[in-house]
Image (cartoon, rainbow, N blue to C red; front, side, top):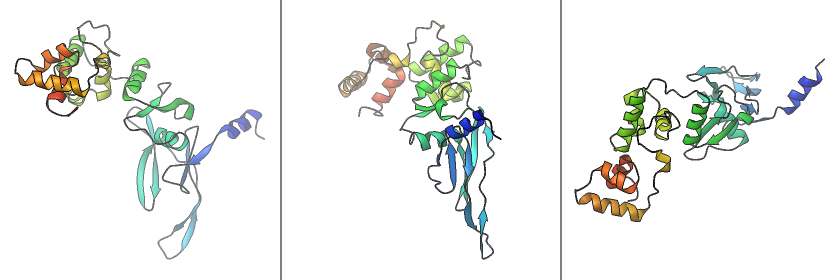
Length: 237
């Protein structure tokens, strides 16, 4: 006989179709995934019933949980946190990522997940102590900021140079990490907002040949990297 607590748990668990795999798989708000009973081709001239069941998850770097999904002979591995949010919330908005609110990447309950910006995700990791920034010394953190503000490297390029993820570089540049290092480089999220009129003025001044990316950045209150993007026509064209 089931206890009242176990009955309550079962009643609370909600299942929905995995997006793109209707009639094949379902995912629950507790982060479980199961396959459904279905008729398949045996490959020997007759069909047969394949019984469904709970999928056994596996783990990837960072303890993120994945499961294999198969449809029409094609198998793909998917992160469970993506399956949960897609089924219960909707598709991931452009430019957003999945956030694990308690910092536990293996906890894929719906209440622990939401779509968020890379900045929010980066701050979550820093707050929970899961961001890989311990490799850098204070002087190296300052060097990361200098190279970015002078427009020499992108976040991805800096990540490759220092052996960190772009997210970790993002945290350093936004001063979520190494905030105590007083190196004079501001949080890039607090830089001046640029519009097309200001961008055109930046290009005009740059053409005079009297300013570098760095000096223009200081003049307009933005990073040298932003100046580089503007003068090379990569934004506000």
